[in-house]
Image 1: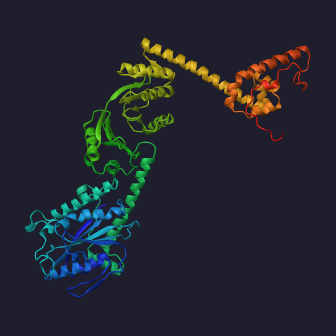
Image 2 (image 1 turned 120 degrees about the vertical axis):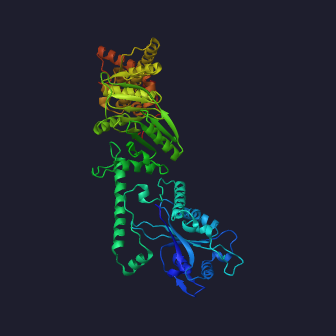
Image 3 (image 1 turned 90 degrees about the horizontal axis):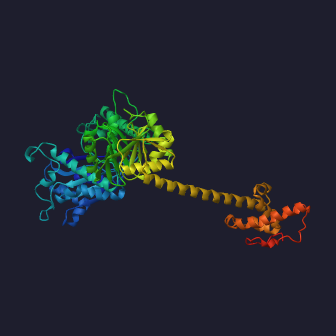
Amino acid sequence: MFHLNAKVIQRSRGKSAVAAAAYRAGARLTDARTGSVWDYTRKRHILDSYVTAPAGAPAWALDRETLWSRVELAEVRRNSQTAREIEVSIPRDLPPAAWRAFLADVARPYVEAGAVVDTCIHVPPAADKALNAHAHMLMTCRRLDPVSETGFARTRNNDLAAFFESGGRRGGTRGDALKAERGRVAAVVNDHLRRAGSRRRADHRSYEARGDPRPPEPHIGEGRKSATMRRRSHDRRTIVVAGLRRTKTLENQIIEVEKEMALTARGFARAPAQDKKAPRQQDYKLSLLRDRFPDGDFTPFRDVLYLVDAKDPRRTRVLTRDGAWVEADDESGTVSLWGPRSAQAAALADAISVSTGYGVDRIERTAAAGKPGKSRRKGAIPEEEAVSLADRWRRRGFSDVTESPAGVRVGLGGRSRLLDSGDHIDLIGPVSDQALRALASKAAEDWGGTLELDGPWPPEAQARLWTECQRQGVTLAGYTPPPAVAAAWAAESGSVADTSTKLRAVRSETAEADLLLGAAAGDVASLKRLEPSLRAFVSGHCDDEQRRDLARADREDIVQALAEFRKLGAAEFERQKAERLAGRPSIFDAPAKPADAPARDAAPAFGRRSNPID
């Protein structure tokens, strides 16, 4: 994520500022001091190059060839330092459109100190075949001076040198200035990563300063690198470095796979099993927190973490070793703290709040209930049991479910949640109607339809819970509702019964309408299942044309006309019954219509359509 290398272009080492500028820009430049021509136009992987000068600078300062030729002419000593350079990596999380703005923020203090900065962006392929984007910033060591012959001041720019040099006559400890500058550039990197919406952050400190046990890479100088490229083979040191880099690439890939497995697997969120001699569980949990909250320092909480659940990209849940919960919700912008009182959990919540700007909300346990005759569990829940409990909650329609050794956490929206430990449930936050419904459904399915209160409950919440238990057929052991609550339930249950009767009537009429439509279409089974009056209406009252129209009617129209159909069918049924008693043939015996039969057009019409056969 972070790389910054500072160097000096020195004439005593055979270096030229013009040659350095030509190489980094991939250009062809002529050195006015020596007449040497440096041509690197065939160099690849150069994306962009430009010169930035202080306000009021002359036009020639923006011309690369003139600028660096004047720099060489301004230095008269054979051991002169002609330019300074920093090489800085460009994070992959930054889009290319943001690269110039990022590099401008890096170079701004140098320009304000009076330096002209020549910036070149290189994009060679990296070891993982992605782009290794980085920038070379070549800067002048003297201020511009319009009255001098070369255009540069006679003395060096001490303000610029102060960014990179300390110790000796400059004061302080050798290396402190460069460390501070690396910290400044790292802060610029992180600022732009935040703007880009990235959760990753750069750290300029060494492995040792960060407490990372990995050994640092051995240094490879430019001479060794050039010699390796010329002979196209490694020496012992470059072999070691190449091996370390390959190992680091593979370790990064393994870590990403492990995280993906942990974040998608069922059960407790934890690191994959490791060798007991080199446990990484706590480091893994710490890395999850750092990934989610890159601006926070959570190293002091390394041994406090018991479980870190980051499966949901919008929420992070932490269970500490003393049983307290800390939850960060990106949607609501809050850090919730609940469970046993814990100074460590409170400090962790504050650390997350500082890194995100979220407010901290302490949520207290409101009430508890359990299976009658069962005491509260002591110790952690086995993972298999937690997975089973969580699956039951998901089948009940709850999606915000988290397994943990302390119990299954069920989110109910807002500040309400449940903690199910199998035979016991704690209600945290407001006792909402959804929480009471969830508790009653748990008792109905897992506790044999019986529920017992544990500890004090608000009287109003007890009454609401008893009513919900009545709705779901659950017995609330040891509770007698006040007369007003019982009366309210009696009224509600009567209303429910009346509504159920009406619903059954509607369903019955709909079924009869479907049978009547089938009978009109010629389905004998449907005709036999109709009640006598409707069967007589279809078979005896209606003629063929009316039955065809009836079969094409909408079910809703049939339901509305059922009462009239029954009346007409009852009259037809009585007529047929009288004919059978008199010994006369019925409608089923002969097609002839009796003279005293009712007119067939008495049946309602349903938008008759012309029959293609007719």
